[in-house]
Amino acid sequence: MCGIVGYVGFREAYPILIKGLKRLEYRGYDSAGVALLDQESDLNIYKAKGKVADLELEASKHDINGNIGIAHTRWATHGEPNQVNAHPHTSESGNIALIHNGIIENYATIKAKLIKEGITFKSCTDTEVLVQLIEFLQKGHNLTLAEAVQQALKKVVGAYAIAVIEKGNPDTIVAARKSSPLVVGVGEGEFFVGSDASPIIEYTNKVIYLEDEEVAIISKKDGVRVVSLNNTEVRAEISELALSLDEIEKGGYPHFMLKEIFEQPKTLRNCMRGRVSKNHKNIVLSGVLDNIEKFKNARRIIIIACGTSWHAALIGEHLIENLCRVPVEVEYASEFRYRNPIIYKDDIVIALSQSGETADTLAALMLAKEAGAFIYGICNAVGSSIPRITDSGSYIHVGPEIGVASTKAFTGQVTVLTMLAMTLAKAKHSITQEDLTSLISELDTIPDKIQKILELNDQIADIAKIFTYAKNFIYLGRGYSYPVALEGALKLKEISYIHAEGYPAAEMKHGPIALIDQEMPIVVIATHNGMYEKLISNIQEIKSRHGKIIAIVSEGDETVKALADYCFEIPSTLECLDPVLSTIPLQLLSYHIAVCKGKDVDQPRNLAKSVTVE
Ligand code: G6P
Image (cartoon, rainbow, N blue to C red):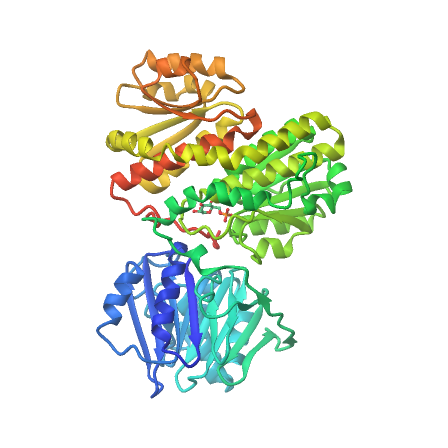
């Protein structure tokens, strides 16, 4: 939700800010803006409705000089996406400019007070309240910019990552965060601010991750000082980024989504590296092993997540319950946090999140922590908020995911959950060593099997062309494949805007069957595992109503092939490992349908990759 970037140093700020915004565009892309302080200390602000490219068009007509600036790409919460509501927002005098990611929840009260004081507002945003408040306090109490920011932040309720600059102060950016991510990049005589490290990595690998309610005073001359809202000095730790530039570039692919789909053999090898023993006898998932007594004695495991991560969690539920015989509950974080859930001290609560920043997941996790449960994170973004508050956790190590529709993170999450279930099953002796060894051996073949499935790309692209007419799709699966059906449907609707529903195949009779006619495409995950025979009956039911069947089948299948209109054959594997394979053709199918329909697959409308507002 919204990307922020800032620069102060010896280079021209504008190109760095624009490049940074493009890297952060996955966070929101309905409007964008930039504020620059030039040599004369004039504050130049340019904004545009639409994408960063629209901002560039606008800014190219004006003075874009200056060695200090801040910029923003927006995902609207308060106020429609237009030029006036785009960030940066300015104070009444026009001296202070501010960018913000998050939501100021008590903005209405503060706004009313400021209006009473005679301040005029230009936009409908919650953010403008913050910049007006900063100036109001600065003027009223004769404060420096940093002091005014500290005082203002003490009065706001909500989430924020902000960067602020002021006229006449061409050396300093003041940045702060609470519940929204913010990274400060530390170079030689130059400094950066970003919602994540992607705008920074090209210039420096040294970063400071701000904690909640910390303020960074970033000065070209004096470096970075981190203080609390009460002005207590904080020892800022400088971390080194492991990220490389090619991880955040398209590398010859037309879209990040396609690059990320094709990366999966490699990303899953990275995910398993050092965790799968060479003799296939053991899995070393250190976060679990370090806390094995807690895991062994857990009354229950609750997995909280949103979106695609929630689908991965459903597969985790099958895996853990089947292999470990521990009860698992899967919860939407947004529902869990508001329904006064029962949490026991001997529960393990796992937060599953690609970004590690999803506001609802973070809040649900805090709730579990307060209730005394052991909290565990499974995340991708290293150093993000969830891994920093959990008792322990495991990274999925699939590298930055930039396409808004999640692909490689999903398969990484399922793989980590598989390894977690195996680790716990071994410790609880709920699996024999023989079964464990064959499971681990099979897990080790998954990257190669995915490589083989990727060879279906052209065939899937051809079939995708046939279905651009569709207004609706149904996805069906049973057992382990039911969450895959949900994920397949979500992928399609996210990027092609075709309405799609995932259903447990047997539930079809209780409603969706009424939708089936010769126009309706139905994707069935019908691999040889689990309830294959029963699925064939479901396929027969569709066939007799003339639905168009697209089936994912195991190599060599003849029965479903004879019934389906189109088939994608994938290598066989063990039932519990099937989801990671069967999801790949579904990712490709959604991708190609969206491309055929001319949609922006990496930045679908209204969506954002990192949902840092509830
Ligand atoms: C957004 C993204 C989804 C993602 C979900 C949860 O909706 O568009 O791709 O699955 O958030 O995000 P998380 O980072 O917590 O996995």
